[in-house]
Length: 292
Image 1: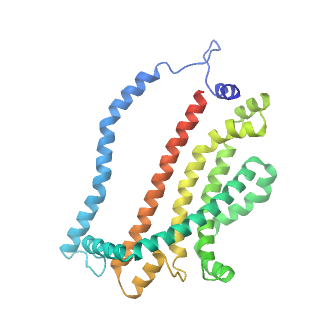
Image 2: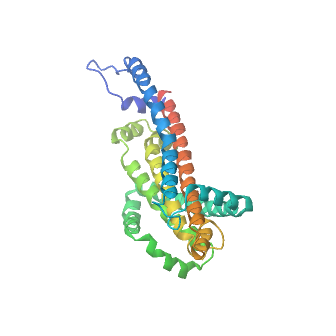
């Protein structure tokens, strides 16, 4: 019942005091959906064709000598190298090691971001005490922290994981704080009038309100974590995709470097697709909760 009242408070009303409904919306949605079906198909086809066209142009430029193999090997060579690395087990092992570093660092940074963002977003005291330091951290050249991390944590796994955590912390924190501060004050008043306890406010008010912002921050944090991973794995890595890149650099194997970079890119696309799927599921859950 409390959810219905809080939800109704945010809905517009007609002049006679009754709550307006979206009676005309279904036909409009049907017309818009029908109009967009063909466009969606075209966009999907273009999305699939885009990498194919890029690879074709790349191969043509290499075959005609416009793009020397010493600068960038042709796609056929890159594919052959990727197959050899996979069959030898080097590529799969490197991907697993890099994923482990990224996952641990992201979970650490994301967990800290959720705690700090909640404290700062809901508490004026937390805002006064913590937010200035987070804003300072946001302005720091994080790549310049690599030497300091090496001095503090050595050259093993710790500096790599902590660097990923630091990179992924800031975007999620900023989006969570902004989402909490953007919660409609009228809804807060309604929740207070209904005497909702803290848990009910979090469940029915704050979670649906901040969900879009948190998901945006999650996508940005995952991207930042992968960027940090590329940098971190250049620091005395004994395994992982960065290790492959360092070895390939020493032997001028640009094909192996390209394979490793493509693996980073694919990991980024997969994580982004995962967050998009979570976003669609979360939005459906929020809308169903509002309708109930």
